[in-house]
Length: 220
Image (cartoon, rainbow, N blue to C red; front, side, top):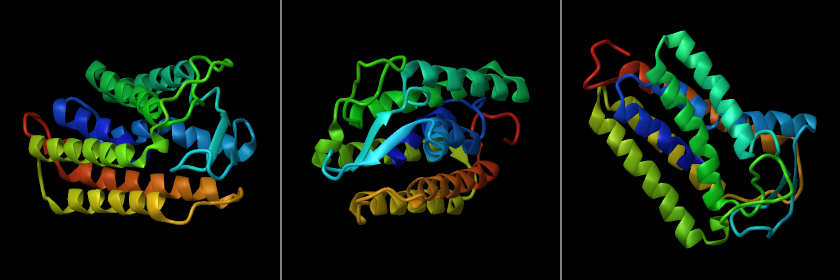
């Protein structure tokens, strides 16, 4: 799952006027993948290209105990929530930040093959929807577009920035789904992912700086 991970960020921003700005929530949504790509590049966590391991994704994510175990995700969520809560002096902001970080593991559980763990042990979990694109594609598009629509309905501001954001998100997702899949590892694999995360997050920051919740008392 790629753009679907940002759906909880849209939901949090739509539900609560005290949630952090959209850019912060987008960082939260992919925080563990940011960490995984960095850990992957230096060998702390490991993956390999295995064409055909799933229908939609050739990555064999065989060693991710720190970023993609439930325990690891909870630790990332707790630290990031503390940072945001302290910075914004808001327990509500901390809660929504933590919620979005943890949502990443739950959404991965739906699409990954069994490569997720509870605490880095040998038991692996994953429901494997990457093997069923006729289910995964409409599911990911559906939750993303519905969450985006809810965010637009709950906030005020110029419509241009969010339309640019969702267009770029869908473009990147289409490339991920329908573009050529890698057949061997290259440093460009994690670098491309980090660039995509960075572009989408920068656009979300722009959107968040130009929209505010309809029930907010202050400009956010």
